[in-house]
Length: 425
Image (tube, rainbow, N blue to C red; front, side, top):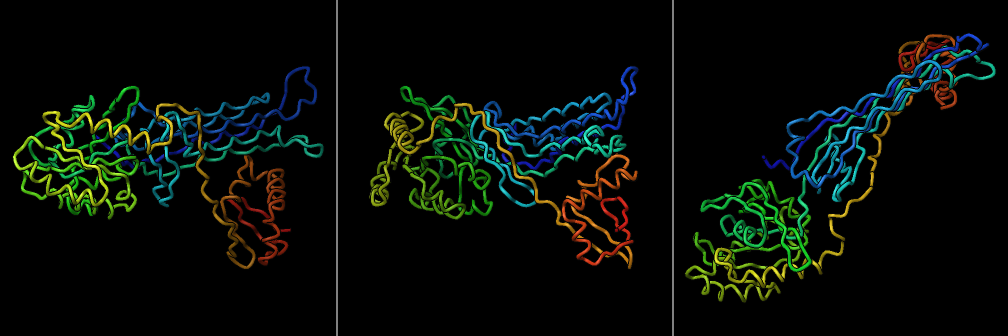
């Protein structure tokens, strides 16, 4: 399975069902009156944090999601059924952005956490809802409202307690394979690790998650190498384990490697460079390792960093390292375990409505536009005198009639409002 940690998708909530125009005509029901039922609400589109999902690959393959519409109302005051909500499972650690505005909408970090990213349209009211003592046989009903639609950018940031960072080929994959059940690909060539590897480490009754992040090199924050693709995954970690090749097998200086990687963290996100770190000097089983360690130790000690000489290949020094990692994770991570499910539902704020605009088309014609106007004029039989009177009353209640007067509209002028034509009086 490919590791996909960023994807853009289109979501469309269901439209609301239309209200019904109907009248009771059954035998032995005198003066039955209006009996049109309301339409059902359209289905919401909901993202759900699911621990069984590891990547965004499914959303990469299918990028369009539409929830069912609500059913229309029926006679005999039968309301239409609501559309079923569309649930989209995403991995823990998914951050949701509006792709058009860049606004951050939600951060799903707990199992079961849900966010409504597109709300279903409200169902229209049937003509039974518009009956009054003076309008006993309404012949109009409301149309259902359209569901929200959005283009979303989903970004996965792995939920790991410990992130193992360092240059390629320093032994990160070997370490995670020795301390956990993870079995990453290990080989003697650059960029063996093409995706982050997760492993769970257990120390007594305590367990924590370790992520082996692909190798960083100089210029990673600008897109050089592979590290830039996965730097975001280090943002959620509590502790960074900075691994260096203390034997300098590939001819690089361990101290320079250490400085370069930290500088890349700082350039990508300054808070990353401030995270607690411990240094792991790997490959102690090779020649020159102990001489290099004696040379480098004063540098790290001056910076207050703990140093753990190990050999991930032979297992030398792994036990003290793992126990210390567990102690630091306990001390640094006050929040509860991420395995606890929550019953939390977030709602993304609706997009701001289009502002009311009043445009003079000619000497006697005005055009009124805006999302609120569209909603007020969505009626079945909108050209019927009863419906036109209802629309006019709505415009008066919402101050639009007054705004037209203020703009210069006079009695007898023609008004084009949301596809409906009215006369100013």
